[in-house]
Amino acid sequence: MRFTSETSSDGVREQLFLLDDIPGVLWTPEGAAGTRPLILMGHGGGQHKKTTGIQALGHRFAAECDFAVVAVDVPGHGDRPRHEEYNRIAMENQARVEAGEELAPLIAGFQALVARQTVPEWRAVLDAVQALEHVGTGPVGYWGVSLGCGLGVPFVAAEPRIRAAVLGLGGALASAEEAARITIPVEFLVQWDDERVPRSASLALFDAFASAEKTLHANPGRHGELPAFELDSALRFFARHLP
Amino acid sequence: MRFTSETSSDGVREQLFLLDDIPGVLWTPEGAAGTRPLILMGHGGGQHKKTTGIQALGHRFAAECDFAVVAVDVPGHGDRPRHEEYNRIAMENQARVEAGEELAPLIAGFQALVARQTVPEWRAVLDAVQALEHVGTGPVGYWGVSLGCGLGVPFVAAEPRIRAAVLGLGGALASAEEAARITIPVEFLVQWDDERVPRSASLALFDAFASAEKTLHANPGRHGELPAFELDSALRFFARHLP
Image 1 (cartoon, rainbow over the protein chains, first blue to last red):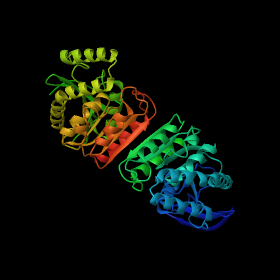
Image 2: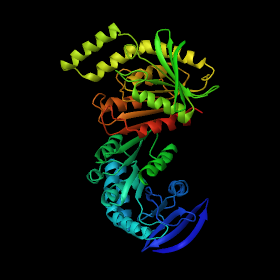
Image 3: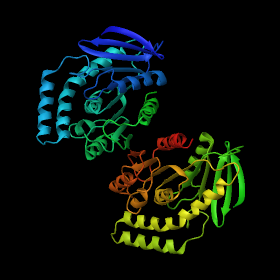
């Protein structure tokens, strides 16, 4: 793990790093020392580790909850090179949608493929970040919607360090089996008028989680229109579950 | 409006009253003077104005949010006399369920009937309580689940003083038309394994609200198993919407 830059703003320290060839960002409260809860955030499709929504919420986790927060670029996103195979599949899928195929199953299949790479990558990120003195091996949460949910469900199912997760804007098509292995508290976000994820697929994914405590929050609006109060809710959710 | 008793505990003043023949309870912060937000709470079937859940949450609205809170007995409940017609219908419905009829439509029809009485009663309660110096004509919220939702939807639709509502554990069968006239912010609670309200009817009622801001919170469990964190959420919801 190699740190490549460090800045501070509004009480939050931002460290960019490379772990092997994976570019990442770590946010911690300025002056943080010792073990604290850690949130791993998964960004959406076409976004990157420092995309506006991730950066804004990551800062809030650090500033308001005293958490550490880490995000890395998904393959083919942000500072990572084009991924020829994923790119080819994405273009084929685009053509299939234009030819009349349903979008949701194609997205689901694609995310399941990428997850085979990101699950081990993200576990390595947790190993590396938890070895830092100002992060340590405290409880870990996962936050990710849309692509961050499609990749997050297999990750959360595979990774016992994750103790609570906010997921959403995703459906059950590819990940119901993994979801059924998830037993930690989950807050699950649904956009009621999501043009990308059929409502029934969202509800089916919520259904599939084996968690005793799972809570579904549905709000009107399209895929990209998550209301701001759901970010406040995510902060409270993690503050409650990552003591 | 005639006050019949007054006590105080944990910083909350409790006044029992009769408005005509309607028994009610008013909770206000101890020492309250001047106008403040008011919550009208509707209790569940077989419950009453001071049933444990209503009393506990009403106290919290007063103690933690500095609100006034009023609840009255629904006809045939609490300190009100048996209501012969409602009683007869309830017994007929019981017999019809035992004979194999579906429960939900019978509940819905019954609640619509009772609402024809409670809507004007509750409007009179608002009039009377808002005339008190320590309540005044501030913004008003409504909280009610189960029977409190079945009676609450027609009430909220009819009463322009209500500015935000927490509703839930109810379905669309009888009240979709009234729901479509509701445009205020709504937080809507669904129990995912509700044995009394079919999930599809719950989702249909959420769908029916015309509110630009409406948020559905669904949690695993049966009709009576609303998780405690949803009460915290209701407090924050009203604190946000009743300034």
